[in-house]
Image 1: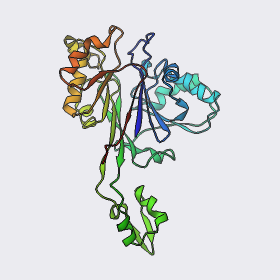
Image 2: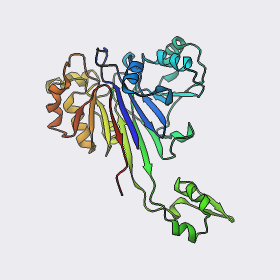
Image 3: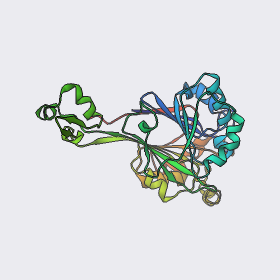
Image 4: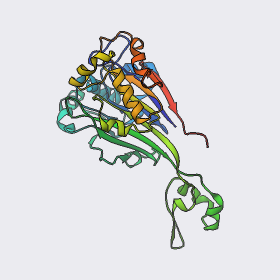
Length: 309
């Protein structure tokens, strides 16, 4: 299972009850932080989320409302004695764009590693031990005013383990766990593959974070069948559709249409303009297109679990 917490829902300007953009995903005791706007640390504390568990910070783009929380967070991690490496990824220009941010953060007690995720995605266990092998993070290009990308996190689920098949193949019981984790077992010169003792793969979990973007085919494709899509929804009024596109954003209805076309299960709206005092006022504009739409609030969280067999 995975835990998702929406830390900040404001766009451009932080408000008393809205920090700027940030979302955490926690799985098996490890965390990815998506964006790090101003107020991320205090929002995490209010929500009961430990950012010290973050292995990776995944930035969608380099506008200030998505990255200005980084210097303080990096300093806090140092002050609290972090020693584990911290990875940061983002779209094109990562090293150059973050240079002034990292200079502000100063010396750290841990290694900062700037990485580019491959187009096909990366198994997080390849970065940090402890992540399930099936956990994978994949970037996808989005359409904003600057280079930008969203992220798709998937947690695959292997088929049911069939003990009798393992016994028939002569696999010792103490090696069954390797096969259940998707690893091969060498036995008397032969290689026993996981698929020889596992049933058909079962449905996993999928989470998608849009970042700032207009409605675009890449987002719809990435969100296909997602258990949860957190989408930007900067503007509330239907009449603001053109303005949203001009500024590289979406309104409530455009975000809902994306979720509907992607056949997502649940949509959380976020990244509200400061002009929106009460997002609930505009919820009908989205709900009439995609029923399972929720207006995100700072501190909102959900646990996504595998379907029961």
